[in-house]
Image 1: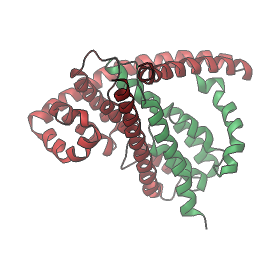
Image 2: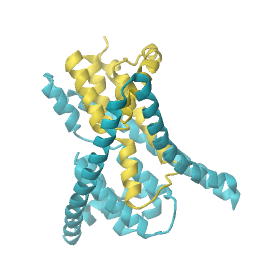
Image 3: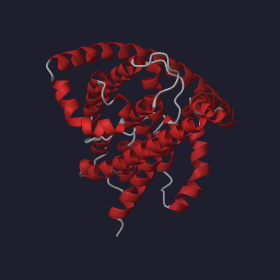
Length: 117
Length: 212
């Protein structure tokens, strides 16, 4: 629903200037935002980036590493707790979000570290 | 007393709030961006996918429960559990001595490492059910349960198959050369996840001690 409504487009355009300033390329921002929410949506974005920038470009590498290093957080949390009927999750969400953020920021930093000359 | 309960409640509140927020934001955005009919299509598609997921999960669960039983009878799960116990025992101290739980957890972790996401999820559900057996009426997950869910959301895949496949299809000269980076990034994510979970559980323990 969020994807179809254009929410991520709005969020991306809001966050892009900030991210660019820190060194995060704008096209991967939607990927970073959506990866914890939807697996298929994020792979669609990855595909778009691969096609637009070529499979071996820096941006594509960042996007690929981002996709490969985290899981669809909300889905996993819902499935695992839902399977045993728990509705409360205590600190699962903050901890998982911290992990996801780390994965994505590391993806950007690592690729830049090892490919910039 | 209220603080400790607030810590428990805030997790629940957060998740529900997020779902509601998502729906409300979607509706508002779709009106603003003029994509309202796309939105209603997405609602229908989402509902359909949910039903498909439930049906396929049921079938897959049956299959993997059967595999687990076979593995258990053959002693395979005991061997794997013994190998992983030093690490898993430290990560999930609550269930350290519960053989049934540790067997299921080991199976799930192994599946994740091997990159068999579709196997890992049902195995993970089996593990959650085993953990639930020890306290069927609790309303909140205990620290080890949270750690287990965390291990699954920030999982360490040896082979990021889907990303590599997409790269190859797009004509990459070496689709798997991102492997070490994926390992490092996942590793970092896992470490931060584990560290923050341990930190939170420590803080919650302190709150409980203050209350008691």
